[in-house]
Length: 539
Image (cartoon, helix red, strand yellow):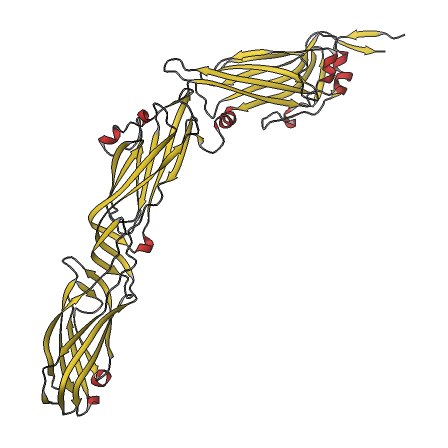
Protein backbone atom coordinates (compact mmCIF):
# COMPACT_ATOMS: atom_id res chain seq x y z
CA UNK A 1 0.00 0.00 0.00
CA UNK A 2 1.29 3.38 -0.97
CA UNK A 3 0.96 6.21 1.50
CA UNK A 4 1.56 9.89 0.95
CA UNK A 5 2.54 12.15 3.84
CA UNK A 6 2.74 15.92 3.59
CA UNK A 7 5.54 17.46 5.62
CA UNK A 8 6.28 21.08 6.23
CA UNK A 9 9.68 21.95 4.77
CA UNK A 10 12.29 21.64 7.48
CA UNK A 11 15.67 23.31 7.85
CA UNK A 12 18.93 21.46 7.45
CA UNK A 13 18.11 19.46 4.30
CA UNK A 14 20.25 20.29 1.25
CA UNK A 15 20.06 18.94 -2.26
CA UNK A 16 22.57 19.48 -5.06
CA UNK A 17 21.75 22.51 -7.17
CA UNK A 18 21.90 22.71 -10.92
CA UNK A 19 24.44 24.78 -12.81
CA UNK A 20 23.26 27.96 -14.50
CA UNK A 21 24.66 30.43 -16.99
CA UNK A 22 23.53 33.51 -18.83
CA UNK A 23 23.52 34.33 -22.51
CA UNK A 24 24.94 37.81 -21.99
CA UNK A 25 27.99 39.56 -20.65
CA UNK A 26 26.29 40.48 -17.43
CA UNK A 27 26.88 39.56 -13.81
CA UNK A 28 24.76 36.50 -13.40
CA UNK A 29 27.50 33.91 -13.64
CA UNK A 30 28.21 30.67 -11.82
CA UNK A 31 30.39 32.35 -9.21
CA UNK A 32 27.41 34.55 -8.30
CA UNK A 33 25.11 31.58 -7.75
CA UNK A 34 24.58 29.71 -4.54
CA UNK A 35 24.68 26.12 -5.83
CA UNK A 36 22.47 24.55 -3.19
CA UNK A 37 18.81 24.30 -2.42
CA UNK A 38 17.83 25.13 1.11
CA UNK A 39 14.65 23.48 2.37
CA UNK A 40 13.56 25.25 5.53
CA UNK A 41 10.50 25.97 7.56
CA UNK A 42 10.09 29.13 5.54
CA UNK A 43 9.87 27.23 2.27
CA UNK A 44 12.08 26.36 -0.68
CA UNK A 45 14.83 29.01 -1.10
CA UNK A 46 17.35 28.98 -3.99
CA UNK A 47 19.72 31.97 -4.34
CA UNK A 48 20.08 32.93 -8.03
CA UNK A 49 22.37 35.98 -7.69
CA UNK A 50 21.68 39.13 -9.72
CA UNK A 51 21.38 40.47 -13.25
CA UNK A 52 22.61 43.89 -14.39
CA UNK A 53 22.00 45.50 -17.76
CA UNK A 54 24.24 48.54 -18.51
CA UNK A 55 22.27 50.66 -20.97
CA UNK A 56 25.35 52.03 -22.71
CA UNK A 57 25.65 48.78 -24.68
CA UNK A 58 21.98 48.82 -25.62
CA UNK A 59 22.05 52.43 -26.83
CA UNK A 60 25.23 51.83 -28.82
CA UNK A 61 23.59 48.84 -30.48
CA UNK A 62 20.45 50.87 -31.19
CA UNK A 63 22.21 53.89 -32.73
CA UNK A 64 25.07 52.11 -34.42
CA UNK A 65 28.31 50.60 -33.24
CA UNK A 66 30.50 52.32 -35.83
CA UNK A 67 32.44 54.35 -33.29
CA UNK A 68 30.58 57.62 -33.90
CA UNK A 69 28.58 57.40 -30.66
CA UNK A 70 30.58 58.55 -27.65
CA UNK A 71 29.97 59.67 -24.08
CA UNK A 72 31.16 62.88 -22.47
CA UNK A 73 32.60 63.46 -18.99
CA UNK A 74 29.06 63.66 -17.57
CA UNK A 75 28.08 60.36 -19.17
CA UNK A 76 25.82 61.93 -21.81
CA UNK A 77 25.76 60.57 -25.34
CA UNK A 78 26.89 62.47 -28.39
CA UNK A 79 27.90 61.76 -31.98
CA UNK A 80 31.40 62.74 -33.03
CA UNK A 81 32.55 63.06 -36.61
CA UNK A 82 36.24 63.73 -37.07
CA UNK A 83 38.59 64.14 -39.97
CA UNK A 84 41.08 66.33 -41.73
CA UNK A 85 40.75 68.95 -44.43
CA UNK A 86 42.92 67.13 -46.92
CA UNK A 87 44.91 68.45 -49.85
CA UNK A 88 46.07 71.69 -48.29
CA UNK A 89 49.09 72.61 -50.35
CA UNK A 90 52.33 73.57 -48.64
CA UNK A 91 54.40 76.46 -50.08
CA UNK A 92 57.30 74.98 -52.02
CA UNK A 93 60.74 76.35 -52.85
CA UNK A 94 62.70 73.15 -53.14
CA UNK A 95 64.15 74.02 -56.58
CA UNK A 96 66.23 76.99 -55.54
CA UNK A 97 68.94 77.62 -58.08
CA UNK A 98 71.71 80.23 -58.23
CA UNK A 99 73.03 80.56 -61.78
CA UNK A 100 76.82 80.80 -62.33
CA UNK A 101 78.28 84.03 -63.73
CA UNK A 102 81.46 84.79 -65.66
CA UNK A 103 83.18 88.18 -65.36
CA UNK A 104 85.75 89.05 -68.08
CA UNK A 105 88.13 91.97 -67.55
CA UNK A 106 90.62 93.47 -69.99
CA UNK A 107 93.94 94.26 -68.35
CA UNK A 108 95.14 97.78 -69.35
CA UNK A 109 98.73 96.73 -70.12
CA UNK A 110 100.65 96.97 -73.36
CA UNK A 111 104.27 96.38 -74.28
CA UNK A 112 106.55 95.43 -71.41
CA UNK A 113 106.11 96.12 -67.69
CA UNK A 114 108.82 95.71 -65.06
CA UNK A 115 107.95 94.08 -61.75
CA UNK A 116 110.55 94.86 -59.03
CA UNK A 117 110.98 92.38 -56.18
CA UNK A 118 108.38 92.83 -53.43
CA UNK A 119 106.50 95.61 -55.22
CA UNK A 120 102.82 95.16 -56.14
CA UNK A 121 102.09 96.31 -59.65
CA UNK A 122 98.41 96.95 -60.49
CA UNK A 123 97.01 94.91 -63.34
CA UNK A 124 93.37 96.00 -62.78
CA UNK A 125 93.33 98.97 -60.38
CA UNK A 126 89.59 98.65 -59.58
CA UNK A 127 86.52 97.44 -61.43
CA UNK A 128 82.87 97.10 -60.56
CA UNK A 129 80.64 94.59 -62.28
CA UNK A 130 76.97 93.75 -61.80
CA UNK A 131 76.23 90.37 -60.25
CA UNK A 132 72.71 88.96 -60.49
CA UNK A 133 71.92 86.28 -57.93
CA UNK A 134 69.05 84.65 -59.74
CA UNK A 135 67.15 82.59 -57.17
CA UNK A 136 64.36 80.68 -58.84
CA UNK A 137 61.57 79.78 -56.41
CA UNK A 138 58.84 78.11 -58.43
CA UNK A 139 55.38 79.30 -57.49
CA UNK A 140 52.58 76.80 -57.29
CA UNK A 141 49.18 77.47 -58.74
CA UNK A 142 48.15 78.51 -55.22
CA UNK A 143 51.01 80.24 -53.43
CA UNK A 144 53.28 82.92 -54.86
CA UNK A 145 56.52 83.30 -52.92
CA UNK A 146 58.68 86.40 -53.31
CA UNK A 147 61.92 85.88 -51.40
CA UNK A 148 63.28 88.65 -49.18
CA UNK A 149 66.11 86.77 -47.54
CA UNK A 150 67.46 83.25 -47.88
CA UNK A 151 69.39 81.71 -45.01
CA UNK A 152 71.55 78.70 -45.79
CA UNK A 153 72.63 75.85 -43.55
CA UNK A 154 76.08 76.78 -42.15
CA UNK A 155 79.07 75.55 -44.18
CA UNK A 156 76.93 73.72 -46.71
CA UNK A 157 76.34 76.01 -49.69
CA UNK A 158 79.60 76.75 -51.49
CA UNK A 159 80.58 79.84 -53.45
CA UNK A 160 83.42 78.82 -55.78
CA UNK A 161 85.62 81.47 -57.43
CA UNK A 162 87.66 80.31 -60.47
CA UNK A 163 90.03 82.37 -62.67
CA UNK A 164 91.99 82.38 -65.96
CA UNK A 165 94.84 84.77 -66.82
CA UNK A 166 95.71 85.13 -70.54
CA UNK A 167 97.80 87.31 -72.85
CA UNK A 168 100.75 87.82 -70.48
CA UNK A 169 104.28 86.44 -70.72
CA UNK A 170 106.42 86.34 -67.55
CA UNK A 171 110.19 86.10 -67.38
CA UNK A 172 109.70 83.68 -64.45
CA UNK A 173 106.05 82.78 -63.91
CA UNK A 174 106.89 80.50 -60.98
CA UNK A 175 108.11 83.45 -58.89
CA UNK A 176 105.05 85.65 -59.58
CA UNK A 177 101.73 85.77 -57.69
CA UNK A 178 98.43 87.47 -58.38
CA UNK A 179 96.69 89.41 -55.59
CA UNK A 180 92.91 89.31 -56.10
CA UNK A 181 90.85 91.57 -53.85
CA UNK A 182 87.06 91.18 -54.07
CA UNK A 183 84.48 93.28 -52.28
CA UNK A 184 81.19 91.39 -52.09
CA UNK A 185 77.90 93.27 -51.56
CA UNK A 186 76.83 93.61 -47.93
CA UNK A 187 73.63 91.71 -48.70
CA UNK A 188 75.63 88.63 -49.60
CA UNK A 189 76.86 87.32 -46.27
CA UNK A 190 79.71 84.82 -46.43
CA UNK A 191 81.92 83.07 -43.89
CA UNK A 192 84.75 85.40 -44.96
CA UNK A 193 85.02 89.19 -44.75
CA UNK A 194 83.08 91.04 -47.40
CA UNK A 195 86.36 92.54 -48.66
CA UNK A 196 88.69 89.63 -49.12
CA UNK A 197 92.23 89.38 -50.61
CA UNK A 198 93.65 86.13 -51.92
CA UNK A 199 97.16 85.47 -53.35
CA UNK A 200 97.26 82.93 -56.19
CA UNK A 201 100.44 81.62 -57.88
CA UNK A 202 100.47 82.79 -61.50
CA UNK A 203 101.43 79.30 -62.64
CA UNK A 204 98.06 77.96 -61.39
CA UNK A 205 95.92 80.25 -63.54
CA UNK A 206 98.14 81.32 -66.45
CA UNK A 207 96.38 80.25 -69.64
CA UNK A 208 94.16 77.81 -67.73
CA UNK A 209 91.21 77.76 -65.35
CA UNK A 210 92.26 77.49 -61.75
CA UNK A 211 90.55 77.69 -58.36
CA UNK A 212 91.04 81.05 -56.70
CA UNK A 213 89.22 80.33 -53.45
CA UNK A 214 86.04 78.84 -51.95
CA UNK A 215 83.67 80.42 -49.41
CA UNK A 216 80.38 79.38 -47.85
CA UNK A 217 77.21 81.42 -48.32
CA UNK A 218 75.40 82.15 -45.05
CA UNK A 219 72.55 84.32 -46.34
CA UNK A 220 71.36 86.47 -49.24
CA UNK A 221 69.30 89.58 -48.54
CA UNK A 222 66.83 90.18 -51.36
CA UNK A 223 65.18 93.33 -50.08
CA UNK A 224 65.54 95.79 -52.95
CA UNK A 225 66.08 93.19 -55.65
CA UNK A 226 68.53 90.52 -56.75
CA UNK A 227 71.10 92.64 -58.68
CA UNK A 228 74.29 93.31 -56.78
CA UNK A 229 77.57 95.08 -57.55
CA UNK A 230 80.81 93.20 -57.11
CA UNK A 231 84.06 95.20 -56.96
CA UNK A 232 87.53 93.72 -57.51
CA UNK A 233 91.14 94.69 -58.13
CA UNK A 234 94.11 92.71 -59.48
CA UNK A 235 97.82 93.19 -58.63
CA UNK A 236 100.94 91.22 -59.46
CA UNK A 237 104.08 90.88 -57.39
CA UNK A 238 107.18 88.73 -57.63
CA UNK A 239 110.01 87.33 -55.57
CA UNK A 240 112.42 87.98 -58.45
CA UNK A 241 112.95 90.94 -60.79
CA UNK A 242 111.18 90.25 -64.04
CA UNK A 243 109.45 91.71 -67.01
CA UNK A 244 105.85 91.10 -68.10
CA UNK A 245 105.14 91.30 -71.82
CA UNK A 246 101.47 92.00 -72.71
CA UNK A 247 99.79 90.61 -75.84
CA UNK A 248 96.01 91.25 -75.58
CA UNK A 249 95.95 90.58 -71.80
CA UNK A 250 92.67 89.46 -70.25
CA UNK A 251 91.55 88.13 -66.87
CA UNK A 252 88.32 86.15 -66.45
CA UNK A 253 86.87 84.89 -63.20
CA UNK A 254 83.64 83.08 -62.55
CA UNK A 255 81.34 82.62 -59.57
CA UNK A 256 79.43 79.37 -59.15
CA UNK A 257 77.47 77.76 -56.32
CA UNK A 258 77.15 74.16 -55.30
CA UNK A 259 75.59 72.01 -52.55
CA UNK A 260 72.74 74.47 -52.05
CA UNK A 261 71.20 73.73 -48.67
CA UNK A 262 68.52 76.21 -47.57
CA UNK A 263 67.68 76.49 -43.90
CA UNK A 264 64.92 79.08 -44.15
CA UNK A 265 63.40 81.77 -46.34
CA UNK A 266 61.98 85.14 -45.41
CA UNK A 267 59.45 85.94 -48.08
CA UNK A 268 56.24 87.56 -49.05
CA UNK A 269 53.57 84.89 -49.61
CA UNK A 270 50.27 85.36 -51.33
CA UNK A 271 47.68 82.80 -52.34
CA UNK A 272 44.33 81.18 -51.67
CA UNK A 273 43.15 77.60 -51.79
CA UNK A 274 39.59 76.31 -51.57
CA UNK A 275 38.97 72.80 -50.24
CA UNK A 276 35.43 71.37 -50.58
CA UNK A 277 34.05 68.31 -48.85
CA UNK A 278 31.47 66.72 -46.54
CA UNK A 279 32.00 66.96 -42.82
CA UNK A 280 29.67 64.09 -41.93
CA UNK A 281 27.03 61.75 -43.20
CA UNK A 282 24.37 61.39 -40.55
CA UNK A 283 23.03 58.09 -41.83
CA UNK A 284 19.39 59.07 -41.77
CA UNK A 285 19.21 60.32 -38.17
CA UNK A 286 15.97 62.24 -37.86
CA UNK A 287 15.17 65.20 -35.68
CA UNK A 288 11.69 63.84 -34.90
CA UNK A 289 13.22 61.35 -32.41
CA UNK A 290 16.46 63.11 -31.43
CA UNK A 291 16.87 66.63 -30.08
CA UNK A 292 20.35 67.96 -30.79
CA UNK A 293 21.63 70.29 -28.08
CA UNK A 294 24.67 72.55 -28.16
CA UNK A 295 26.53 71.14 -31.17
CA UNK A 296 30.21 72.03 -31.21
CA UNK A 297 32.67 72.23 -34.09
CA UNK A 298 36.30 71.94 -33.03
CA UNK A 299 38.86 73.26 -35.52
CA UNK A 300 42.58 72.70 -35.12
CA UNK A 301 45.02 74.28 -37.50
CA UNK A 302 48.64 73.13 -37.10
CA UNK A 303 51.57 74.61 -38.97
CA UNK A 304 55.19 75.57 -38.61
CA UNK A 305 54.93 77.89 -41.62
CA UNK A 306 55.71 81.33 -40.26
CA UNK A 307 52.96 83.15 -42.06
CA UNK A 308 49.64 84.67 -41.08
CA UNK A 309 46.74 82.70 -42.55
CA UNK A 310 43.05 83.34 -42.82
CA UNK A 311 40.76 80.35 -42.65
CA UNK A 312 37.34 80.87 -44.18
CA UNK A 313 34.77 78.21 -43.26
CA UNK A 314 31.53 77.81 -45.14
CA UNK A 315 29.22 75.23 -43.57
CA UNK A 316 25.96 74.56 -45.40
CA UNK A 317 26.30 78.01 -47.01
CA UNK A 318 26.94 79.83 -43.72
CA UNK A 319 30.29 81.59 -43.67
CA UNK A 320 32.73 82.54 -40.93
CA UNK A 321 36.39 83.53 -40.89
CA UNK A 322 39.19 83.15 -38.41
CA UNK A 323 42.80 84.22 -38.24
CA UNK A 324 45.78 81.89 -37.88
CA UNK A 325 48.70 83.92 -36.54
CA UNK A 326 52.28 82.79 -37.03
CA UNK A 327 54.51 81.51 -34.28
CA UNK A 328 57.09 83.93 -32.94
CA UNK A 329 59.87 81.33 -33.11
CA UNK A 330 60.94 80.15 -36.55
CA UNK A 331 60.24 76.50 -37.13
CA UNK A 332 58.17 75.80 -34.03
CA UNK A 333 54.76 74.31 -34.70
CA UNK A 334 51.80 76.34 -33.58
CA UNK A 335 48.33 74.92 -33.00
CA UNK A 336 45.37 77.27 -33.31
CA UNK A 337 42.24 75.79 -31.77
CA UNK A 338 38.74 77.17 -32.06
CA UNK A 339 35.48 75.70 -30.76
CA UNK A 340 32.38 76.86 -32.54
CA UNK A 341 29.41 76.35 -30.25
CA UNK A 342 26.25 78.20 -29.21
CA UNK A 343 26.94 77.80 -25.49
CA UNK A 344 30.65 77.26 -24.95
CA UNK A 345 33.90 77.61 -26.73
CA UNK A 346 36.66 79.87 -27.89
CA UNK A 347 34.87 82.13 -30.35
CA UNK A 348 37.45 84.14 -32.29
CA UNK A 349 35.20 87.01 -33.33
CA UNK A 350 31.68 88.32 -32.95
CA UNK A 351 30.77 86.99 -36.40
CA UNK A 352 31.32 83.47 -35.14
CA UNK A 353 28.71 83.98 -32.47
CA UNK A 354 26.26 84.58 -35.30
CA UNK A 355 27.37 81.43 -37.09
CA UNK A 356 24.57 79.66 -35.20
CA UNK A 357 25.32 75.97 -35.58
CA UNK A 358 21.99 75.31 -33.88
CA UNK A 359 20.17 76.84 -36.82
CA UNK A 360 21.94 74.46 -39.18
CA UNK A 361 20.13 71.59 -37.51
CA UNK A 362 16.62 72.80 -38.26
CA UNK A 363 15.65 70.98 -40.35
CA UNK A 364 18.23 68.30 -39.70
CA UNK A 365 20.52 67.89 -42.75
CA UNK A 366 21.65 64.63 -44.26
CA UNK A 367 25.22 65.97 -44.16
CA UNK A 368 27.21 69.11 -43.61
CA UNK A 369 28.95 70.36 -46.72
CA UNK A 370 31.93 72.61 -46.17
CA UNK A 371 34.25 74.83 -48.14
CA UNK A 372 37.53 75.77 -46.50
CA UNK A 373 39.37 78.79 -47.90
CA UNK A 374 42.99 78.82 -46.81
CA UNK A 375 44.31 82.26 -47.69
CA UNK A 376 47.62 83.94 -46.96
CA UNK A 377 48.85 87.44 -47.78
CA UNK A 378 51.87 88.03 -45.59
CA UNK A 379 54.74 90.29 -46.71
CA UNK A 380 56.94 89.11 -43.84
CA UNK A 381 56.64 85.33 -43.68
CA UNK A 382 59.30 83.04 -42.24
CA UNK A 383 59.59 79.63 -43.81
CA UNK A 384 61.66 76.60 -42.97
CA UNK A 385 63.25 74.46 -45.63
CA UNK A 386 60.45 72.79 -47.63
CA UNK A 387 61.18 69.30 -46.36
CA UNK A 388 60.45 70.50 -42.82
CA UNK A 389 57.23 72.40 -43.48
CA UNK A 390 53.85 71.10 -42.42
CA UNK A 391 50.34 72.43 -42.67
CA UNK A 392 47.32 70.52 -41.41
CA UNK A 393 43.73 71.31 -40.47
CA UNK A 394 41.58 68.86 -38.46
CA UNK A 395 37.96 69.03 -37.42
CA UNK A 396 35.88 67.32 -34.79
CA UNK A 397 32.11 67.80 -34.95
CA UNK A 398 30.37 66.93 -31.67
CA UNK A 399 26.63 66.53 -31.68
CA UNK A 400 25.09 65.95 -28.21
CA UNK A 401 21.48 64.84 -28.22
CA UNK A 402 18.45 64.00 -26.13
CA UNK A 403 15.45 61.93 -27.06
CA UNK A 404 12.10 63.45 -28.00
CA UNK A 405 10.37 60.08 -28.37
CA UNK A 406 12.30 57.08 -27.12
CA UNK A 407 11.52 53.38 -27.14
CA UNK A 408 14.06 50.62 -26.57
CA UNK A 409 13.41 46.89 -26.26
CA UNK A 410 15.96 44.29 -25.29
CA UNK A 411 15.84 40.72 -23.99
CA UNK A 412 18.11 38.36 -22.12
CA UNK A 413 17.93 34.62 -21.44
CA UNK A 414 19.08 32.84 -18.30
CA UNK A 415 19.86 29.41 -19.67
CA UNK A 416 19.76 26.14 -17.78
CA UNK A 417 17.74 27.50 -14.89
CA UNK A 418 15.65 24.31 -14.76
CA UNK A 419 16.29 20.70 -15.66
CA UNK A 420 14.23 17.51 -15.65
CA UNK A 421 15.91 16.07 -12.57
CA UNK A 422 15.10 19.13 -10.57
CA UNK A 423 11.46 18.85 -11.53
CA UNK A 424 11.30 15.11 -10.75
CA UNK A 425 13.26 15.29 -7.51
CA UNK A 426 12.05 18.53 -6.01
CA UNK A 427 9.51 20.65 -7.83
CA UNK A 428 7.05 17.85 -8.57
CA UNK A 429 6.94 17.06 -4.83
CA UNK A 430 5.83 20.54 -3.83
CA UNK A 431 2.18 20.89 -2.84
CA UNK A 432 2.00 24.66 -3.50
CA UNK A 433 0.14 26.00 -6.52
CA UNK A 434 3.15 27.92 -7.76
CA UNK A 435 6.76 28.77 -7.13
CA UNK A 436 8.16 32.29 -7.42
CA UNK A 437 11.24 34.04 -8.65
CA UNK A 438 11.59 37.05 -6.37
CA UNK A 439 14.00 39.94 -6.20
CA UNK A 440 14.42 43.70 -6.24
CA UNK A 441 14.11 45.73 -9.42
CA UNK A 442 16.27 48.85 -9.57
CA UNK A 443 15.91 51.29 -12.48
CA UNK A 444 18.57 54.03 -12.78
CA UNK A 445 17.34 56.17 -15.71
CA UNK A 446 16.13 59.77 -16.03
CA UNK A 447 12.66 60.44 -17.41
CA UNK A 448 11.94 56.88 -18.59
CA UNK A 449 9.40 54.18 -17.90
CA UNK A 450 10.41 50.52 -17.78
CA UNK A 451 8.13 47.56 -18.46
CA UNK A 452 9.41 44.08 -17.69
CA UNK A 453 7.97 40.70 -18.51
CA UNK A 454 9.27 37.14 -18.08
CA UNK A 455 8.69 33.82 -19.81
CA UNK A 456 9.58 30.22 -18.99
CA UNK A 457 10.97 28.52 -22.11
CA UNK A 458 11.48 24.89 -23.10
CA UNK A 459 14.47 23.37 -24.87
CA UNK A 460 13.28 24.89 -28.17
CA UNK A 461 12.90 28.31 -26.52
CA UNK A 462 9.12 28.18 -26.77
CA UNK A 463 7.04 29.94 -24.16
CA UNK A 464 5.32 27.44 -21.83
CA UNK A 465 2.80 30.06 -20.72
CA UNK A 466 3.25 29.34 -17.00
CA UNK A 467 4.90 32.59 -15.87
CA UNK A 468 2.88 35.58 -14.76
CA UNK A 469 4.61 38.97 -14.40
CA UNK A 470 4.36 42.49 -15.76
CA UNK A 471 6.16 45.22 -13.79
CA UNK A 472 6.37 48.95 -14.37
CA UNK A 473 8.92 51.24 -12.76
CA UNK A 474 10.08 54.85 -13.09
CA UNK A 475 13.28 56.72 -12.28
CA UNK A 476 14.95 55.55 -9.11
CA UNK A 477 12.07 53.23 -8.22
CA UNK A 478 12.97 50.10 -6.34
CA UNK A 479 10.20 47.56 -6.60
CA UNK A 480 9.76 44.03 -5.45
CA UNK A 481 9.83 41.61 -8.32
CA UNK A 482 7.57 38.58 -8.34
CA UNK A 483 7.37 36.04 -11.15
CA UNK A 484 4.81 33.38 -10.35
CA UNK A 485 5.40 30.05 -12.07
CA UNK A 486 2.52 27.57 -12.05
CA UNK A 487 3.41 24.12 -10.67
CA UNK A 488 1.94 22.10 -13.53
CA UNK A 489 3.20 19.26 -15.72
CA UNK A 490 4.38 21.91 -18.16
CA UNK A 491 7.07 22.85 -15.66
CA UNK A 492 8.75 19.51 -16.46
CA UNK A 493 9.67 21.01 -19.87
CA UNK A 494 11.08 24.20 -18.36
CA UNK A 495 14.73 24.94 -19.14
CA UNK A 496 15.28 28.70 -19.50
CA UNK A 497 14.09 32.01 -18.09
CA UNK A 498 13.65 34.91 -20.53
CA UNK A 499 13.48 38.55 -19.44
CA UNK A 500 12.03 41.16 -21.79
CA UNK A 501 12.55 44.87 -21.12
CA UNK A 502 10.98 47.90 -22.74
CA UNK A 503 12.13 51.45 -21.99
CA UNK A 504 10.06 54.38 -23.18
CA UNK A 505 9.87 58.10 -22.68
CA UNK A 506 8.68 61.28 -24.37
CA UNK A 507 9.73 64.88 -24.11
CA UNK A 508 7.55 67.01 -21.85
CA UNK A 509 8.08 70.66 -22.70
CA UNK A 510 11.76 71.40 -22.13
CA UNK A 511 12.29 68.15 -20.21
CA UNK A 512 13.77 65.39 -22.37
CA UNK A 513 14.41 61.73 -21.59
CA UNK A 514 18.11 61.15 -21.06
CA UNK A 515 20.31 58.10 -20.92
CA UNK A 516 23.87 58.22 -19.62
CA UNK A 517 26.56 55.57 -19.72
CA UNK A 518 26.04 55.19 -15.96
CA UNK A 519 22.39 54.16 -16.29
CA UNK A 520 21.35 50.57 -15.80
CA UNK A 521 18.55 48.15 -15.03
CA UNK A 522 19.41 45.75 -12.22
CA UNK A 523 17.63 42.73 -10.77
CA UNK A 524 19.02 42.14 -7.28
CA UNK A 525 18.60 39.33 -4.76
CA UNK A 526 17.04 36.93 -7.25
CA UNK A 527 15.69 33.78 -5.62
CA UNK A 528 13.58 30.80 -6.54
CA UNK A 529 11.21 30.24 -3.63
CA UNK A 530 8.13 28.36 -2.55
CA UNK A 531 6.43 30.13 0.30
CA UNK A 532 3.33 27.98 0.84
CA UNK A 533 2.56 24.28 1.04
CA UNK A 534 4.84 21.36 1.78
CA UNK A 535 6.57 18.48 0.03
CA UNK A 536 5.18 15.01 -0.71
CA UNK A 537 7.42 12.10 0.22
CA UNK A 538 6.48 8.56 -0.88
CA UNK A 539 7.07 5.87 1.74
